[in-house]
Each structure stands twice: as C-alpha cells, then as structure tokens.
Image (spheres, rainbow, N blue to C red):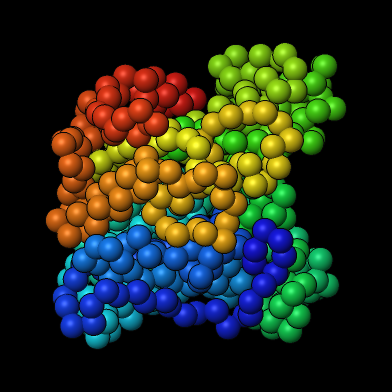
Length: 436
C-alpha cells in the first residue's frame, strides 16, 4: 500500500542489503519502515546512501501490511501479528547471513520511524527476538500505544466487520479463514479504514502459543540500550485528517465532536465526562478553525507520541537516551499532505527522515539541502552509527546524557543541538498519568 493507492504485490517478503565493504565485520542497522502498518516499503524511495559514508551495513526489511499483516479474530485460527512475525523472521535471517555482506551478526541494531519505531520497540522487547539485537532506536513511536496496539476485543470487532463486507460473515473458525483467503487481494486491502487513524489493522495481544510474538504488554524485557525521541509537532500529520469533519462543529457542536474523537482515541471508559473536561480545558479553546486545528495538533502530539514515548522511557531499565527534534526547513510530510492549505507551521511527524535517508524523489523545498542541513544530517547519522557500534550515541563537542529521573534530553533546533532540562516533559507525564 502507498498513500496514493495499492502498489506492488502480495509476495512482498524481501530485504535490501547495503554494505560499503563485503569483507569487513561492521555493525548492522536494520531499518523497519513506517506507514501506520498500512503502507510503505524499504525500496528505492528511501535510500540509506548517507549511512554508506560510515562503517556500517544497513538492511531494509519488508513485511506484510494492513489486513494481510495484522488482521486478527483474537483466536487460534487468525491470531494476528503476521507483520511482526515477518520482521522477526527477517532478523533471524540477518543474524545467520549478514556475515556474507560484511556485517557482524553480534552487533545488530534495529531502528525505524513511526510504525517502524513501534516495531523496533516490539522487536527489542518480545521474547521471540531475544538474542537477535544489540540495541533499538525508536523515532516518533513506541509499542503499546493507542495506534500501535489494539485494545482487547477491538481487532476482533474490526475483523468481523471486514468479513461482513466481503460476504464471509456466515462462516466461523477455519471456514471463515478459507472464505477470506478466497477473496481478491485488492478487495481485502482496500477495505481498511485508512481515513481514521484509530481504525487501522495494527498489532494485537495474542493468546500464548508456540507461534505467538506479543502475548502481553509490557513484556518484562527492558534492559536493551535504547534511543527514542519525538518531533516538535507530531500531531500535524493527524490534524490533516480531522480538519474536514471538525469544521461543521465549530460554533457549538465542536465540544461534542471533539470529545467523541478524544474518548475513542484514548479508550476512555471510566469517569469519561470528568476526564474529558480536564482534557478539553487543557487543549481546546474554541476560537476559529486555524486555532482549532492548532489545538488538535497539540492534543495529538501529546496523546499519540510524547506521553506514550515518555512513559515507556521512564519504565525502561536499560541505557536510554531521549531527544526532541525541532529543526525546520527541510522536506515536510505535512506540506506534502496538506498542500499548505492551512498555514500551521511546525516540524511534522516523519520530517526527520530526510536527514537520515536520501529522499531525492520526495517533496524537496527549493534550496534544500543547504550547508546547515548537510551538517545536521552528518551529525545525526554519525550519532546513530556510533550507537549501533558502542550502544552509546556520540555527538562531537557535546555529551548526550542518558535519560534519568526527569533530568535532561537532547534538543535539536535550527540554532543548535544542546541538552535541556526535562521539566516541561515532566508536566506532560504528570497530567496524563492522572488521566489514565
């Protein structure tokens, strides 16, 4: 799947291996692409040529997406998580074969952006992948969030709705699976509700079995070295999807429309009215459409990204490093999706990809990259490779301090890269801990 429709084919399980030296024994960085578990691929659209200036092997892996990868009836017949199982299989192959491509099988780090970030977190945390990885980098996403793990019963409800759409709802068990497998792959994929971010096929908790990969969250494995971070305005991406249906409710009904969305997004059940009043007071101010969408941006940034990532950081027992990316001016996913129809500035979810990968066939602003952009790209790539080599990120002239008890984080801006105090993020954690 891509954002413009279905491309490629059902037979998608392949790897792209990039190496600067076939005879070496270099650290290995495995890239898991993002795309909301619905679309994306590790192909030529995102090329790791910047990494080839360093001593590292990069492997991009493909995995099943959408209903093909994450459909689940939450039973033994269709348990789900096929996309994650593909990723584990890819890691097993890499562990066994990467020495033939100049890679060191004992030095494998997984990294990704968005759903790829959540996947990297799963892979470092689940028992099935223990012993395969040395470290993990999660850029704008973690496992177990409202967009990367279904609540109990949610996946089954979606799967039953799919069966109804495909006229398979009169069957059950293995007969239902047979009916679904008989459907054209195109109709199977296009039934996914891509317009609603909380209604997409994503990982699910499975019943314990020999093939299960995620049976509980958290899993209890949290000793691995880990880098995780957020973009300053992650929620811009999701704001684009809500602007059309938010407009009719501006004058009076926004309170109702907005709260339905908030309650659904957060799976709120107990004390819903009281909790929604707290959330509404924190984020929404009922001015005009532009302010309304800015309020939504802040809401989605905190609820979908900042708070879940910070919560997992606090819980993590191993070496951990946190960053906030606020460097603007490069290729912007928000600008591509919205066509600048609304003047809301910020650094969107996924905007950091251009500093790690050659995205020359993407949306490139005039004059980009300039000298500062190139310098930042080199700095970040070197930091990631140093982490893959030594399990500690390194930036010349700066000590990137580990994430401690609300101590400090790395702040990446247009002016400088520096360590900053954690007090603002502590307030985010405290607020949402009291809600949930």
